[in-house]
Image 1 (cartoon, helix red, strand yellow):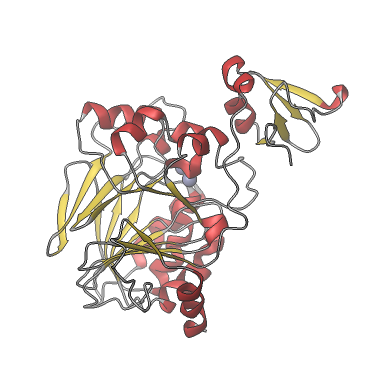
Image 2 (cartoon, helix red, strand yellow):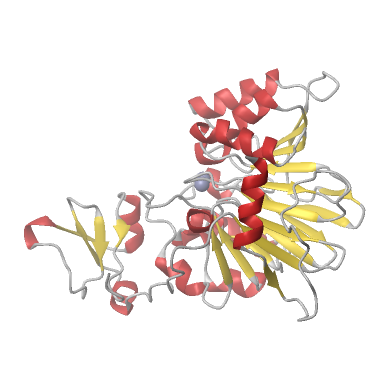
Length: 366
Ligand SMILES: [Zn+2]
Ligand SMILES: [Zn+2]
């Protein structure tokens, strides 16, 4: 099982980013050891519509950032076992939405955990309550209770020699009154290692990004975990100009009901090497002593279609037209508009997305 999985990874992939032509990939870029491999590994797990990323530091210490929905928990535990993970040193909940913390419950029940990081904002939900109960029941490797840390910006850590981890958000006081306070208060962190930096953005939206700019933190990173599953409120040109990523990862479920990732986001990411968990499955990045980033994926992307060009009309005029039956929305100039009796008008694509509609690829045709 384990051999088959990694065999597939090795076969399918081996993209090397920014390597000199003479440099060779290691024979197995997704080597799962969690100790003394000397490389920094980041695995973006395919957890359907949700987020989950594992960092294995060069000294074998592990950080798990989010865990997808509760229904993904068992599968996530299997994946961690397959990667040889024995304990979680830092279990990080970026914000209390179920698509980020649900799967962490099973992880807390299954692995020793040393520290839990949480933004600890007031939030009521059955999943968050179960998460906190699981934290209370969890054990460290020596049978104690894990440290529960309410995390704010400014926290830094050297989890392994030459690796620096910095929490960039949230800061006090937490944002209130935004479109989604949990999203905007997401824990944002960067990992700097020789050869590259990773930026994990949770689900931050516009107000959360503005705070990062105000704090004048360093946002430059080679690898960006795109915020909010590629929603249009998670990314804009100004943010990408600051991050300047070479590689972007969108953690998203196939055919999800939110229409993530948004085609505006995909258009903005043109020119950036894009990986998506719905296309590629698990995505494994490795930064070794050669300081070169190697990327392996569980699957090949289906056809690697070019992101649909946004319809100028849809974006400039704002109006989109939904089909009340299929819950798909179209640019007003789309040749495949629904019959008039089935049409619902929205003032913007965002409004349509909020109403549960997903975009039709109007420009490219299907
Ligand atoms: Zn969220
Ligand atoms: Zn989310």
